[in-house]
Image 1 (cartoon, one colour):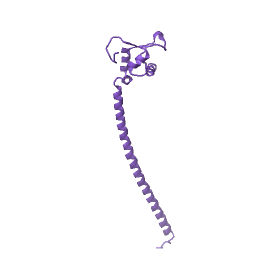
Image 2: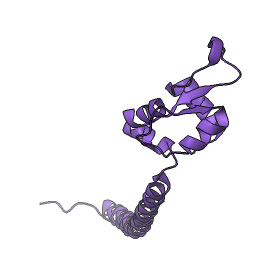
Image 3: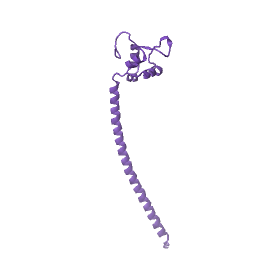
Image 4: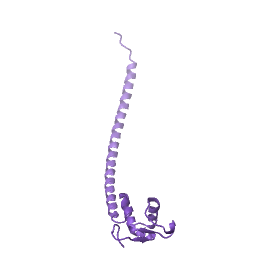
Length: 142
């Protein structure tokens, strides 16, 4: 069996299992690729069910037509996905640490704010009491 991108003469894969194995995917996934993404599969007698075949060169061209489709094949994509996951985990850890620091800062500022509000409330009560006391003192005439 040749690999993806080979330069061998016309090579035909017959059956869903063989096409799926070539692309490094499951049969149902390959069927979905045909249905939703236009994977070049040939149906003898124009039937949508039953046996199928596919030209390897057409499959390679389909995979290489868009960069996103390169992940369809099992060739080399595992390492890329693992590296992507590692990068995502590092970023996740960094973001979690930033969130922890931010929460601590917010808690500290919240406590300071509440202390200031309580201080203002106490000052307001003192002023009110002082005002009541001075309100009872008669004015001194000039």
